[in-house]
Image 1 (cartoon, rainbow, N blue to C red):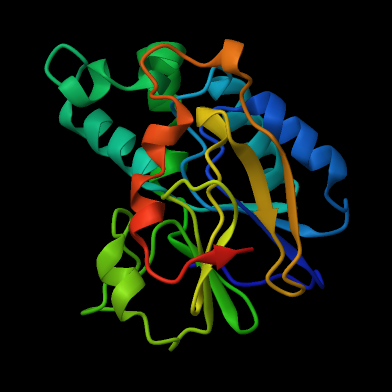
Image 2 (image 1 turned 30 degrees about the vertical axis):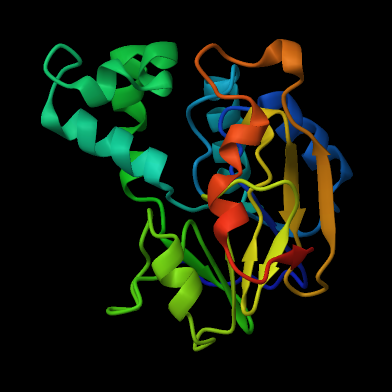
Length: 230
């Protein structure tokens, strides 16, 4: 799992999901000297998947960013390991596989497979969805079980995975996925200061086919108890 750099501030970025134009806008307004943490699910859904992956990986290679594994990266890797698209519905239905093709996806496979599951800061940690409340290991798909049982043992936990209309606080948990690929915003949260920076996500005319409009995607965040605006 990744450890903090000497940078004084970090910005944890919510699920980008192929929204390259939004990511470019966000990078333009974030301080150039600060460290970036992509909270997983950089791939799939949006119209700029390949460009988003290259942009994020370029930041990783330059030492400015950490890209955490999300459930979408994990599912693509697992499907690639199982075989070809003809035998795997997981590949045939994967936006990244359809956009990039088999050769490029397999070129990315090792990188995606070795993405860290968590990034540990001073009094906080970022991971994609949360921690299993029995093993306290990162879990890439968990929701309510983590929200209800997290006891603050790791300090503040910053997560993506569950879209909502704004950055939300639930006791020791901060949720930073604001639904960029569903017509919401792409947001970044600074755990050192509590600041939030958001830019518009996909415009209505840019919505990829097959995605639900924004209101249908808030069901998990609306069920979470005691959420407050970040």
